[in-house]
Length: 79
Image (cartoon, rainbow, N blue to C red; front, side, top):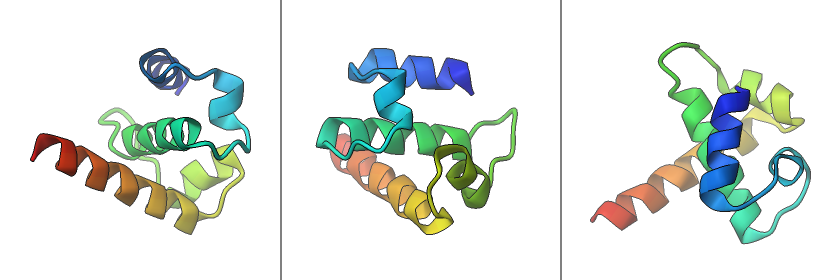
Protein backbone atom coordinates (compact mmCIF):
# COMPACT_ATOMS: atom_id res chain seq x y z
CA UNK A 1 0.00 0.00 0.00
CA UNK A 2 2.69 2.49 0.96
CA UNK A 3 4.79 1.82 -2.12
CA UNK A 4 1.76 2.48 -4.36
CA UNK A 5 0.98 5.68 -2.44
CA UNK A 6 4.60 6.84 -2.67
CA UNK A 7 4.62 6.20 -6.43
CA UNK A 8 1.46 8.25 -6.93
CA UNK A 9 2.79 11.07 -4.72
CA UNK A 10 6.03 11.25 -6.69
CA UNK A 11 4.31 11.13 -10.07
CA UNK A 12 1.59 13.65 -9.14
CA UNK A 13 3.60 16.02 -6.95
CA UNK A 14 1.44 15.70 -3.84
CA UNK A 15 2.34 14.69 -0.30
CA UNK A 16 1.19 11.57 1.50
CA UNK A 17 -0.60 13.78 4.03
CA UNK A 18 -2.55 15.46 1.21
CA UNK A 19 -3.28 12.12 -0.45
CA UNK A 20 -4.68 10.59 2.73
CA UNK A 21 -6.31 13.78 4.02
CA UNK A 22 -9.54 15.60 3.27
CA UNK A 23 -8.19 18.06 0.67
CA UNK A 24 -10.35 18.32 -2.45
CA UNK A 25 -8.21 20.33 -4.84
CA UNK A 26 -8.21 18.91 -8.35
CA UNK A 27 -4.59 17.74 -8.23
CA UNK A 28 -5.01 15.97 -4.88
CA UNK A 29 -8.39 14.46 -5.80
CA UNK A 30 -7.05 13.09 -9.07
CA UNK A 31 -4.00 11.64 -7.34
CA UNK A 32 -6.23 10.03 -4.71
CA UNK A 33 -8.50 8.58 -7.40
CA UNK A 34 -5.48 7.14 -9.20
CA UNK A 35 -4.32 5.50 -5.97
CA UNK A 36 -7.80 4.07 -5.40
CA UNK A 37 -7.75 2.68 -8.95
CA UNK A 38 -4.31 1.13 -8.37
CA UNK A 39 -5.45 -0.43 -5.08
CA UNK A 40 -8.58 -1.81 -6.71
CA UNK A 41 -6.56 -3.38 -9.56
CA UNK A 42 -3.53 -4.51 -7.54
CA UNK A 43 -2.73 -8.07 -8.71
CA UNK A 44 -1.19 -9.01 -5.33
CA UNK A 45 -4.19 -8.02 -3.19
CA UNK A 46 -7.93 -7.93 -3.47
CA UNK A 47 -9.26 -4.61 -2.14
CA UNK A 48 -13.00 -4.04 -2.31
CA UNK A 49 -14.46 -0.55 -2.61
CA UNK A 50 -15.49 -0.84 1.05
CA UNK A 51 -11.93 -1.85 2.06
CA UNK A 52 -10.44 1.17 0.28
CA UNK A 53 -13.11 3.41 1.76
CA UNK A 54 -12.24 2.27 5.27
CA UNK A 55 -8.53 2.95 4.64
CA UNK A 56 -9.30 6.53 3.59
CA UNK A 57 -12.30 7.28 5.82
CA UNK A 58 -14.62 7.46 2.81
CA UNK A 59 -17.84 5.74 1.79
CA UNK A 60 -17.54 2.85 -0.69
CA UNK A 61 -19.61 4.79 -3.22
CA UNK A 62 -17.14 7.71 -3.09
CA UNK A 63 -14.34 5.27 -3.91
CA UNK A 64 -16.38 3.71 -6.73
CA UNK A 65 -17.05 7.11 -8.30
CA UNK A 66 -13.39 8.08 -7.91
CA UNK A 67 -12.21 4.91 -9.65
CA UNK A 68 -14.69 5.49 -12.49
CA UNK A 69 -13.53 9.11 -12.83
CA UNK A 70 -9.90 7.96 -13.09
CA UNK A 71 -10.87 5.40 -15.76
CA UNK A 72 -12.71 8.08 -17.78
CA UNK A 73 -9.71 10.43 -17.62
CA UNK A 74 -7.35 7.63 -18.65
CA UNK A 75 -9.56 6.64 -21.58
CA UNK A 76 -9.82 10.26 -22.75
CA UNK A 77 -6.03 10.65 -22.64
CA UNK A 78 -5.41 7.52 -24.70
CA UNK A 79 -8.13 8.29 -27.25
